[in-house]
Length: 406
Image (cartoon, rainbow, N blue to C red):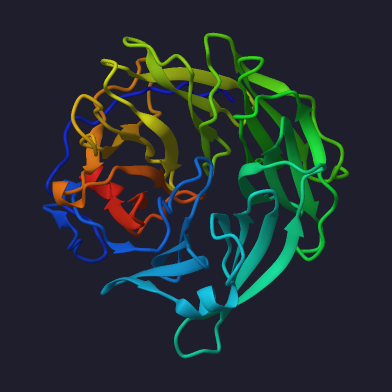
């Protein structure tokens, strides 16, 4: 089976038709969101570069976001985003900065503390007349030695095992649970000697899971895979996805599509006018990698950062997005969120250019919008394609990426 090399082409312009399931009252027209949809009592609640905080289920979108006292659960309804306060009450005191893995009847998440991780779960209560959730704390995880933890992600393999990955100190660590998250093994160290600023992400693959990490010491982005059916401690050898040319930075985000293609977007450390700021990386179902640099830095004032990648369930579209701002103007630097469409139907190695702004806060809010987050799994066919971003005051903005293709 021939590996499909990507044709990178940007859809120029945004059409005026909207496919939201409800009218987006927080936008002026369908082109650009200018006002927040809701807010929480936590600065930059959509932050944590590799994490996904959104999922679609039961006909609507959901999000787990941090508040000052713990995780909050939000539901996107026809009336707007509504909070489920019973979840905050039940999970009060545990870390709210969480990565989520959603399934039909439950959502499992890992919350990030200063030097530990907390795995918790929301379980649907289907007997209730309105959809309610039971909240359970499953386990607290610790690195192999005392160390700060910047972020963490969670995934599940084909055997039903749960995996959590995080960097601690200068090591890439992973934890596994084979009994539905109730008990967890001691951490397995997959790599050592990375930079203190580096991060990792655990992602599903066909036939297993993989942990991908940045390594700014060796100037590389690397991966190790655990195949289904193998003992927990048996991992494949390290695969260097790319090395050299300042390819590594601590920005990683992934999505796996139904045909087994893994898309990874990352920031590099070039940071040079005229040079690419990001790298779009694609792993074919056969395990072959393609690295495509994109987003040329136009001048020293423009600061694109924190890229993410999202896709559709039928493989029709792949999107890349990131935050941007212009430091040549006073704070909040005319900050905004940009997105572009990636297609895979013909062969090309052209870089992405001219992304379209999708979230541009009204100047009255006076804070930088950043940290875009999307779903871990591909967008469903018959629903809005929602992404979120936020500012340091806890205001959360949404956008429907369907607007980019209509």
